Amino acid sequence: MKRKHYEEDLRELQAELVALQEWVKATEQRVIVVFEGRDAAGKGGCIRALTERVSPRVFRVVALPKPSDRERSQIYLQRYINHFPAAGEIVVFDRSWYNRAGVERVMGFCTEKQSQRFLTDCSNFEKSMIVESGVIFLKYWLEVSAEKQERRFRDRIDDPVKQWKLSPTDLPSRELWYEYSRARDEMFEATDTEHAPWHIVNADDKRRARLNLIRHFLAQVPYESEARPTIELPRRDKTNAYDDHASIAGRRWVKDNYA
Image (cartoon, rainbow, N blue to C red; front, side, top):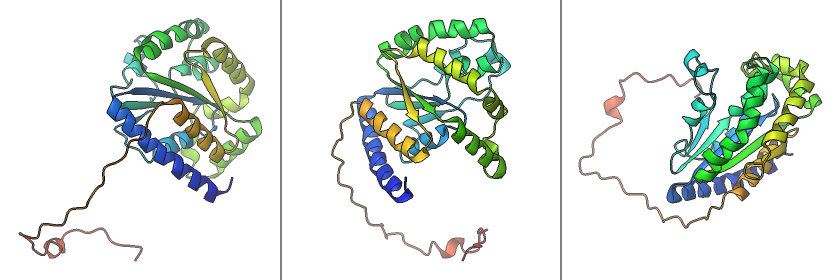
């Protein structure tokens, strides 16, 4: 997809996201959006496109690090619940409690018994604690082909400004492709429910994936656009005017290297 068309379509969708944001604040709605998917599927780019033109006080992105010793001793879902939205908030989870069904299971960070218990309990948790509490709940899985994933990994390895994207679990996910596929399939089987379905996004083309996901997200939230009030820029009050440029001329200015 050509950049010009992508940017034009994205701007229109982001304008709608602003309208949705105002509706969420006005109605004190609560929204949770979960992003999961293959490594290198483009979750970060989708989240950035979704949130870059809205208020971070309304759209809160949660990307939790490895659990601390204290968090590992808690009930598994506890540290995620702490980040659930209050009235007028949309919380976007960049990976979520579904770590237990994916990376933790495949990489041996939890036991098989713990993973199976999660799959057994997760659906009831989402129904009783999220959906029946009146929260709008959306789950997205970004799927990428093996060929595209390999190309993106090689790009990250070769590009010094992208190497930070390679986590210790990324490269093993390449080797363990089919183990991750089986974990994905079992996760869908257990948690793709009517009350909290999974929405799968074809992420081989990053631009199309972002547009398709945002358009779908907008269609799932019953927001209404409200007329915005006319805003007039006030004049400066010059009653106490003085040369406020000269007053800071001798201060420590950052050198302009690009004049």
